[in-house]
Length: 435
Ligand code: URA
Image 1 (cartoon, rainbow, N blue to C red):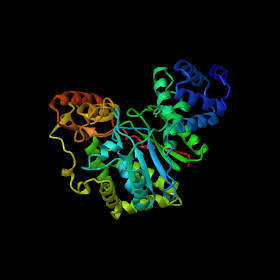
Image 2 (image 1 turned 180 degrees about the horizontal axis):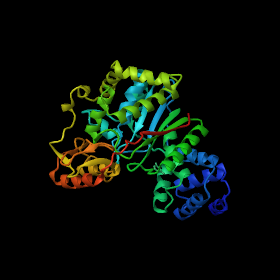
Image 3 (image 1 turned 90 degrees about the vertical axis):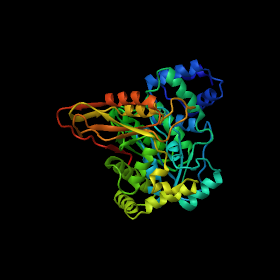
Image 4 (image 1 turned 30 degrees about the vertical axis):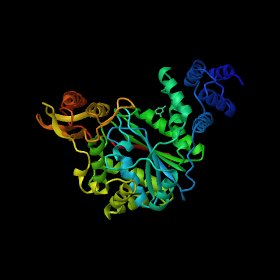
């Protein structure tokens, strides 16, 4: 088989065979096929597209290029949730104990944050002593016994995707739906879950800014997952403003805890209940969505969900008392209000800018090596549709380094757009795909 012929065939619009796709993925991963030939193939794919069969084959070839996690020592259906990334997205910390309390098994590997979106693993480290690594046998045992474990990603998941993504980034071939969908799904499939619930974010703070694209990505990923035998569905949700009010690690943990206690923000609560209910159906704990929603409400109201959070934190070595006493979580030394000298209604909030302001304060990583400050961040007071009076605070900044305050302030002031006419609050859930 020659790489030249594969490029030529795709250039002419032919569907690639499984052998050809495996040849490309294996050859690129081991370095025997050079960047320039793979770049040419990517551009041919960009213009000619790929069928569902080709996309699923590419996904599996990338997934199998590294470690494939085997979760079979855990009994029952293992359901995972994946968010395409958003600002203030702390849903995993709400969902994991919620779904576990309702009877499903959560065996999750999560990532650290990079850039303007935070990572679950960083947030969890807000609990003093919380361990994000454990031997595989302990992980299985904890999930079998207690239904919940969340650890950092270990091993090498889909190394072919890592290399291909880096190449796409410099060859203007990132924004192809088949390539994006296969890239995300290869990592999810390698993580081992039987069923996958996707949260595809759409808006200013998301990778997909446009609803049409977000829906297309959701459909493409659902199709791939189901095609390769992983029961998959997706929720397309709004990311035109941060989710909830808190942005920054420990601040987001407090908001997640409040949500499990039944006092969370409306949007975070709705999204958490929606995703958790779908996860219960995927895990076959509940027969239908109605029953699942009822079950989720029940575990929030009777305190089982918050008790499961405490149990989980404690099992992984964390200080569970922090669930009731927030002074045990990292706390910033200073706070400062963000004031707009205008009156009006919030028309839009640049969610990515809010994430950037948190990053500037030290809540996120500029590079993989950066240290983060778990205490700092932003609490938003005004969201889209809210009325603002001149001189009123739209947000509060929690910070430790005075030199960073000015820059975060000006990013946040510019993130808000006010209008004089009333504005409708945006929908949170745009579409459910694949059920
Ligand atoms: N995120 C990924 O993991 N892959 C893509 O191609 C785009 C976003």
